[in-house]
Image (cartoon, rainbow, N blue to C red; front, side, top):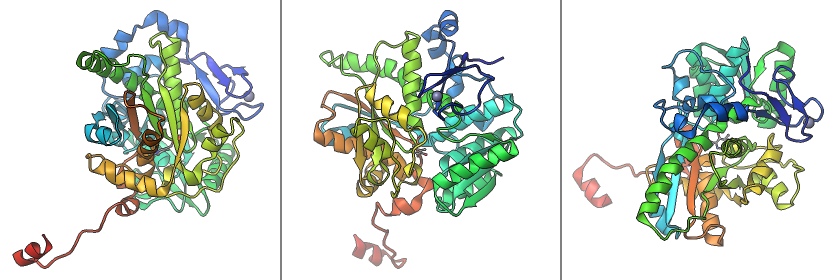
Length: 422
Ligand SMILES: *Cc1c(COP(=O)(O)O)cnc(C)c1O
Ligand SMILES: [Zn+2]
């Protein structure tokens, strides 16, 4: 029994039954959207049935997910999602905004947003009785798949570029995955992992290829929706004159484009169910040296032209984004924008968020770097409520982090040396 009615190709619109396809559209290779049974969900559930749940993980949205609950209710698989939202009043003031928050995805079990996708894909793999799951990854998707697989004893194989940050490779190895480092780019690892999974019959998690990743990632939108119901109410009590029509503006860093498409899908689901009346505005942020999706958006086309990616933000360093079309639409359909930032701006943002008690990896700080640029250029107004996503932990890439700070002094173990220093 499948918990969804089928798939729809995001390019040609062709529809498929759940058992008919596994990855992308057989006609044109387009990404498939999983179609939930909205009518059945609407009949059976009200928003309160969800918001009153006590489950503090993404599994609180089980009625809206295309999989059943995974085995065992106290594994790390049950710790994915339900990440905190922090208010950032000092940064808000600096940016001349009234309301600024950050959703901290580094609090996921393997310390990045990718756990949402991997939790759902591993659950799907168990349903399909897949012997092996595999993914290509710049690091985080692999760490997430390895960790979520380890949680339930699922065999996992990860292809990563050999340039992946050491901490991420350490995660892969510690979680007991079979790790294959490819002497090439992420894009080359991607193509190789698809070939290998076809050859050996493995279940492939690849981002922008397996439709279930989006279904995991959409749970971030559900959490934002629940948080916003509450935050908006409080906000309204404090400031009766607030501009009630200003939608929430969400800043997301973008590489392959699957996170931003997932967040968009989550809000589209809520809209289709009639549980929200207004869509938030979604703003995508890319590194200047890896901006294929921003380029397409700015050229007003859905044709994604590959680039030769170079950026310190390894998690969003992508030549050919695998979910580019939906990522362009996520922004276009919500009245958002694409912004690009330099590596220098990304590094500066790591330190600025650090001073707020949040430690992002470069790709995590990229969304905030985009906000800094947007606030200076009038893309967001003072009254706009803004939520910035931090998608990954700074501990995953301390080499990049050390570029954002001045190294600590080393002194003799004497009081006079301390006095001299101060
Ligand atoms: C994967 C990732 C992103 C970008 O997600 P895409 O789906 O590739 O656009 C951003 N930040 C971090 C930390 C990531 O791991
Ligand atoms: Zn198609």
